Image (cartoon, rainbow, N blue to C red):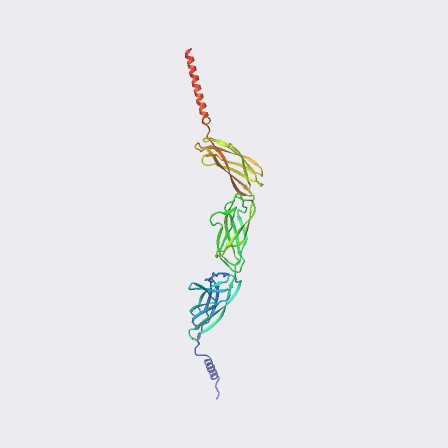
Length: 415
């Protein structure tokens, strides 16, 4: 019996459907599959930290993800540790260490993830590099009773940071003995593989240097990432008695452990500063109540560089007034000029040696500098007969004139 063409195709289709239905089960059972999706030091994947030799109780985050299509029940992770890692804990007040850490993660839904936090310590003599640890995972699928135990590798990096001084600058660029509030900028670069956390810098300031204000010799930088540059600013003063020439300061740092380490030396140069000598003070003595006293003194440049736009200003105190400023122009090395001022002395000025400050302002190498030199001026009251001599002369003249007129009148009457 022959089948027509349509019937033949229908038979072949039924045969194919039957074979396919026989080859596949009526339904499929879903399975859970736990894998490691990420590993990093710290508690945030967006802000990871670096682990260094000697670190204690550092959090290591391992993120587990369920890549299957079923719930993973009773997930447990055991991290086996090798040197230089340990897990430290206390029992009955005694510090103990373990070579593994176990954490129960519970259930993880299909397509979901969960972060596990392992607290580890690293030996101080550990070498830098990437260490491979073994993580054992135990779990079961919700639809299967069979327990799954797998091991996966975890690569854990341990790096040190290495802080170095990249460059140094001061503002102003040239500094001198007596400079105040000098701004020192230091650029720090981390040339190590790991970041340095809790970085604090301290500038050692010994005589003739001192901090301009409290804590202006130290700064907290925080985290300095690997191959990143950070800038630190310090402020210091220079003693006026400092000698010009090269000098250096030590820059120390700590990373939160409290121990200071030397990062490097900061080299500075103190420029030569013009020095002045005051001589020929005239007068050396004045009296209370004096008015319009011409006060003069000589200013000599005892340095080896020129001082330009030299201005001298007297700062004598509350009992003196008048014209107290004089301009001397340029003083070449060894040159001497005389400055003049006009003093009025208060009648209530106390007797004794009065200190007068002479402030000298000048320009040197395009920098505005100043210096203050103290001179002593004697204030003495004149003896009574000298102090009131003009009045006495007037009285004597008046008496003489009066006597003269009386005698003249008497002679006129007798005639």
